[in-house]
Image (cartoon, rainbow, N blue to C red):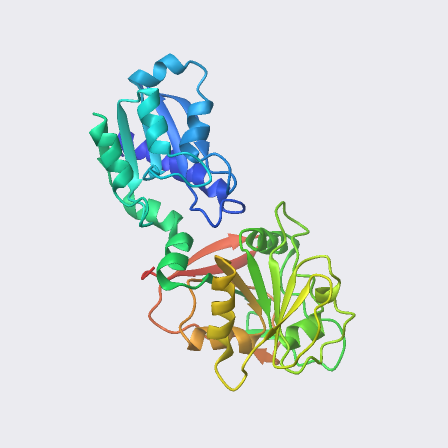
Length: 347
């Protein structure tokens, strides 16, 4: 591993801290190195606030060292005025002589222009260090802006014999997740801007779909209720978190609950995704049930999949969704459960 790769890897680590709050901006990390020693680092914490380069430069105690330093940044520094001034201008103004960039910004207002501005100022610029990893960091941003839909993550837990739930007539839902994997689920919720469930899941499980076991904002809650038969007493309608209901019926809005008129004679998934795109919702987590998840799989509308394989056997019930063949998966462990993770390679 070269020194440039080593420091870029640190940029990637930092950038991941912004998954919860940076959207709709991309997640970015920056590191400043002087004489093979890190003297400053930062990441894009929250949309509307300082970018990674700004935070990294602000963390340097002795600014005189900047004129002899290299700044590493996972994404091309911006060159246009948005909610904050251009980072490329700041780098030029501080006299940093060398810039190492992970990947070019795909956003049309920036793409290549930040690099050119740095070069025009006489700064040495190196591009493409750990490029694939850096592009993977901003895959949500890229998907939203190129495919004009949210980045979609499907998530479910299934028993050791391949069931997602039992067929119930009342009673409590089967719990397949452990306390540790439940925390991991709440972390995923905090990293997504919206979360979707179907009518059956809302009725039988009565989920809150909030972030209770992790720090972060609650996602926008979405539920499909074609004929508005779900009872008003469900947690989804408690008014504590904004909720969208996709239905064919007319109904006046209630506090924090909005009803979206949907044409159920047509495929409703593209309609839901269009509504979210228009609302600038960049990421969507789909939690169930099995029929809804399979609908996304059959439509080839997914970007990531997380499957928790529990040790419990149910012997009967509702079969778990089936992932199409041809997609390689990674495996990792959480509190004794095997987690299977798919990432599309065409984003």
